[in-house]
Structures are given as structure tokens and as C-alpha cells.
Length: 247
Length: 247
DNA sequence: AATACCGGTTGACATGGATCAAGCGAACGC
DNA sequence: GCGTTCGCTTGATCCATGTCAACCGGTATT
Image (cartoon, rainbow over all chains, first blue to last red; front, side):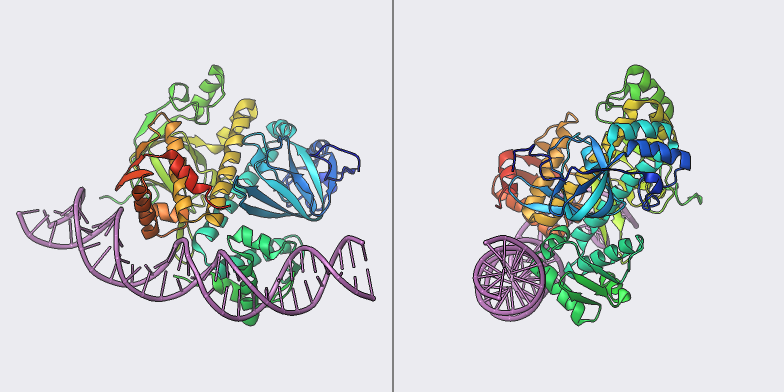
């Protein structure tokens, strides 16, 4: 293999013309609420799509930030690394969600974004997004909402990590995934996990064995059917009840 | 006491003319990086200051959102409540920091903001901030950075809650406070905690007894001197070492 | 001044989840 | 097609933190 730039060597460089205006995710993603004319102006900005293979990085902590990314298809995780080697998954992202917002602050990415399956992303050069959102009020406001939503989401995770026990965390996790699959038109009751038990554990502040045991327990109690990464939710209310358990 | 609006009855309504342009926090707060002329335009927007007494709410979860708040002086906590009664402190905020960013997402506040000492805040009507930041590029960009910084901060807390043990969490907490006091011109080595052990515990995902024991342990080991809410840091490196403990 | 209350500290004990270890099936490389 | 590896499951044991309880000092209440 010829030597290539270490930053880009592991991402596929195939670039495809793309357009928000005919993207079926536009109601979930950045274009939400824009008029047709405004959409076309956004198209000019979001001009490239890129494929990222499973296991490859979209970006790495420390790299300079200059764009945010919208997931066109696929599945990602983000994680942060501590100096001493510990790391933690900070989120799992799916189609229509944005990646890279954390980089605006320092103008460098502060986490790693890794594809958990072959994926496609749209690059949105950030300074051009700022320019355009100075002109399109709706875009500006929606972008602010998206950033704010990320903050609210993080508070939810803090709550989960700070106050919930293992089974509550996993129930919350499954219900959240289910809900997000639903709003993308997939089954709410049956899906494949894209991540390992270890990654789930890292996200939930648990060890992989604990995650595995909780899955088994949910199965014994008839809430779900698990077979490796294949999950079927048999009793949504059972899972919900697990969460309000404590007084 | 006469019956008053339940939303406002517990906040002091004294309103004071204020100006970012002569605020000594302008390098920490929203005005960062603005020119004199731009500063004056921000002054028009941030026209009111309000006093909040210790223990009073600045806002409550569920209330409609229409402004963000800059802390002029004082100290706040924010917390979220789960339906089942559990709650968690999501942050402690001090002078120069912004409150209310979580409300942009749903146009309702999603947490409670409570003053931990008598405080003064500046109200910034959000739609006017958006207008102005469409005109002032620097303001727009800085505001985006502030929101992004909040996301990065939350990731740090998630890391803390997900991977650290009790003493590491408390050490990280003290070092973070110390650093924030320092950048406000206060002693980095000596300060008064504004919050109770229980509030610290809630923030760090620990019980108050655990927090208390960790304080005592730090004292035994000579890292700090504690007397109730009065903290002196005797050995910063000792605290830092506690955090990189694990491989 | 007496009393109640609140926040903090400390001790004894319980327990949820981590750790260590073994084994198993599916996927993958050769 | 076979062996190796990886992700997952399950069991046994351990330990950090939670839980329960007693006590103390400072502050607010009457």
C-alpha cells in the first residue's frame, strides 16, 4: 500500500453529488423547515457525500475542525479518550443526525467518530453554514435547536449515568433506540444492534458482562428476545416499567 | 403575603440598567471578541439585570423559553427531575457563564436553575440575540462556540460518571472549580463551596456520605484542608495524580 | 436561653456491579 | 474446510459504594 496522509488514508474518498432537496431525511436533518428556495441554497453548500467503511474514522480527536457532518446512511459511535487510556462512548448516531458539533468550541475535534457499519455522510463546511444561516433565519434557528437538543440529550445521559441502575440504563437505551428507529420508518420492535456489548457498556457506564446479564434477564422475564445483535422487543411497557422502578 | 404570579413570586424583580461594555466579565462572557461598536449594539439587547436571592429559581423546567441568562455575579445550580422523583444536578454555573441554552431546543426550559447564593443575572432575549448575531459575525461565531463548549463539558461529565471512581470524581470536581475560580481572578487554592455535600454528590453520581468520606480522606492524605464548606487545596499535583490513577 | 433543624461526619453492614475465569458459537483468514 | 479469533454468555468471588444509624456543631426559631 502506498503511503498516504494518515488522516485520510482510512476513509474512502469516493465523492458523490448530493442534494438535500431530494434527500428523504430532510425532515429529520438540517433542512427541516426550509422553503424550496432555501433548500436549494443549502444544496450548494452540502455538495459532497462521502462513504465511510465500517470501522473507519470519520474524524479523530485533535484534528482541526472545519465541517460538521450529516449522516446520510449508516451508523456511528463517538468516543472520548482519557490520557490514562480509559475511554468512553459518548453517543451512537444514526441517519439524519449531525456529527462534529463538539469541534466548534476549540476548532479541533474533541472526540473520535467511527462508523459502525458502511455509511455515507454529507460534509457541511462550517464557516459556510454560518454565512448561510446569517441569511436564512429558519436555518439559523433550526441549527440552534439542533445544538440545544444535543445539550438536552447529554443531560439525559448524565441522569442515566448518575441515578439509574444497570437494568434501568439498558431499558432506557433500548427504548431510545427503538424510538429513533421508529422515527426513521423502521420497526420499533425488531432491530439489529450495530454495536458490541462492550460499546453499549462503555456508553452506559457498565462492563460488558453486566450488559450481557441484563439482556439475559430481560429475556427471561419476557420483555425482549435477544440473539446476539438481533433484538425483538416483546413488551414495551415492561421495559418502561423497569425504569420508573424506584421511588 | 399577597398572591402573586407563581412563576415570578420567588424572584426579586429589581431591575437595573446594565451594560456589557463596562462589565468586567466581558472577556469571559458573551461579548468576547467584539469590537467597541459591536459591544454597544449588544448593550441595547442585554438591557436588564435582575437579582435572584439564594434558593430562588431563575427558571423552572417546563416554563416557556424566551431568553438566555448571563450570570453577572453569584452562583447557580441546574437540575433535572425524573417523573419518579429522582433528580440530578447537571451543572454548577458561576459569573460569566450562560444559563438556559437547553431551552432553545423545545422552546421550553428542560431543567431548573436555582441560585446557590444571592446573584445577579442579565437577561438576553433569544430572538433578539439571533437577529443581532445575523448581523455581527463575531457574535454569531462566539455564541456557537459557547454552545459547543457546553456539549464538550457535558461529554467530560459523562466520562467522569461513566469511568471514574468516587475519589477521582471528587478530585476532578475540585480541580475544575479551582480552575474556574482562577480564571475569574480568585484564589485557585482557597474557596468556599456554595453547594451542599448532597448537591455535589448528585452532580457526581454519588451519595452524600461518599462525598463526605472522600473529603476526609483527601484531608488525611494532606491534599486539602476541609472545614465544612471552606476548602484549601494544599497539593494540586496530589489531586491530579489521583485522577490518572488507573491504567 | 432553650429547642429544633440542617448539614456534615463517621461507623457498621449490605449489595450491585466489577473482576476473574471458563466455555461456546459465529465469523473470518488461510 | 479447518483453525483461530472475537463477541457473547454464564458462574464464582470480591470490593466500592450505598444504606442505615448515631452523633455533633452551627444556625434559625420561639
